[in-house]
Length: 103
Image (cartoon, rainbow, N blue to C red):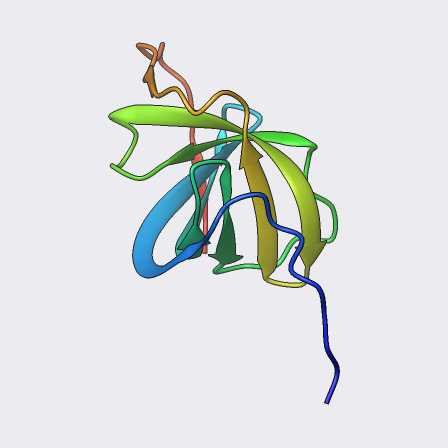
C-alpha cells in the first residue's frame, strides 16, 4: 500500500454536479464536478482535450455567473482548476456570434 501525503490546503467535498466550461469565449464544454473546495475543484470533461488553455471560465448555473479558473493539472478527462479569487462574476452580455458546444 502506498502512503501518499495529502497536499491540499483545504478539505475537499465530493459532489456530482453538472457544469460548463467556456474556452476562448466561443467553445462550451460540458463537464461534471467531482470534488470542490473554496480554492478550486476537480472536473471531469465529457470530451478529453490534449491541451487546455491555462485559464478558463466555469459556470455552475448555465452561465448566469462565471468563475475564472486557472488549470493546475490535467489527466485525460480529469482536470484540476484553482479559482482566481473565489468571487463570482456576472455573465457579460453577448453580442451576436456563434458558440460551439462540445460533448
